[in-house]
Length: 246
Image (tube, rainbow, N blue to C red; front, side):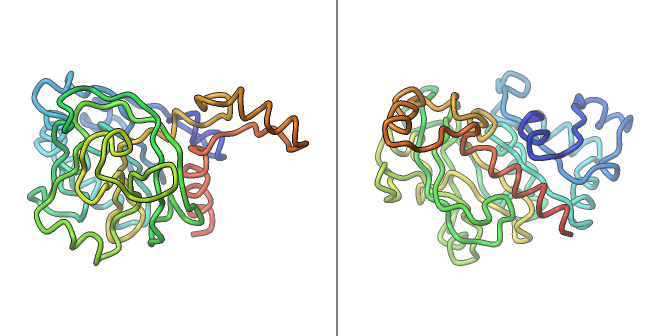
């Protein structure tokens, strides 16, 4: 995650969550906050739940609300997405969570590359993008929400899992977890907070793509330039460009 922000032109600080919870660092000193994937508290008490409780009980959720109000940006990936949902920041700043990310419908951990269609929306991270090909690595990514169609009406769905041809799908393996409406990422009403299950930081470079060798040969034979970067970097660039402009 830090590498993605640095490649996009940001000055990056990697901080342990404890330093923030104890007040040793302050969010007011930053413009972009990244909650990476990984197993918070081993996910033994539910994906992101223990970490969300620590933030809520330490009153740091108020810091996050102020951070968003001040026009800053937040990206939560995988466990970071789960955290933002548990805190009620996504899909909107609520004290009671409106949605959940529960166990995959397959009942097992899924690690695979997936196609996604980017939905035109106010989300600054996905500005100008139409599709993404990124990996997922999670056991609890099944997005569920009562009256989930409201997200569609409010323009808060940022991405859908799709077939290779770009059609949103509820079928495995195109939809790796069974998420309602094939949702793979949502934003808040400001468009400056994005939560997503697939990992953009795992596709920063062309050589991270699973078929990069085949693509390289095809491009060489057709005289096309061989890319340096992968599709994931564009989300970081969009956020940094937005913050510079504003």
